[in-house]
Image (cartoon, rainbow, N blue to C red; front, side, top):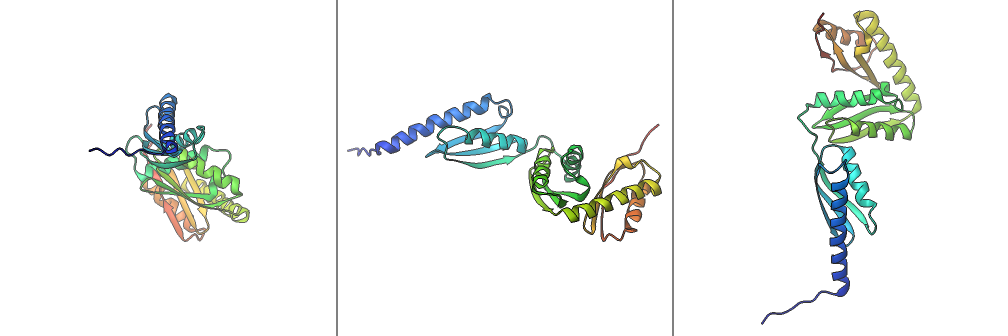
Length: 233
């Protein structure tokens, strides 16, 4: 003899509502040009949405969360997605992408921000003027190609920012005077006693000369990430 176990009416209504919500959110993501090509699985239980799968960037990850959270009746969104950027980039390439993104932003004082990347995770260190620049710098870093996550270790301290920015400017000028090549191809970022050099030079001796130039400023840690790119013609 079979025993029929009935669920409370409220539980059945919740289950039906969750199923309808799940389908609606899934269709909305398919119709969103930012998310239509992403592999995102949607599940809903008691009004709590769980997102799983992979997306190509943090911009798209944020868009998925915002879309789900804006749906009527949603109580919470659990983000279980993994950021899987398209293509295979080295940490050095990702770091250069982050620096380029910061360089192009008019809202961030990049001379006092050092960037390193470990396993696709961008690490921001240094000083910014206020909490707004702290948030903007992280947002810009997340938008860079190849970034899986961001560790924001920046400190909002105006005095440190001014000192580091001035030191970076002086080093940049010294590089131009002593190395005899365009300073536009070399970027300098200072964080306390640490300086990070990035960008490109034409020869290996030029790259090695950069470290000697920086040493004259008494900085203890010199990270020379400049790439040698021979110039033809």
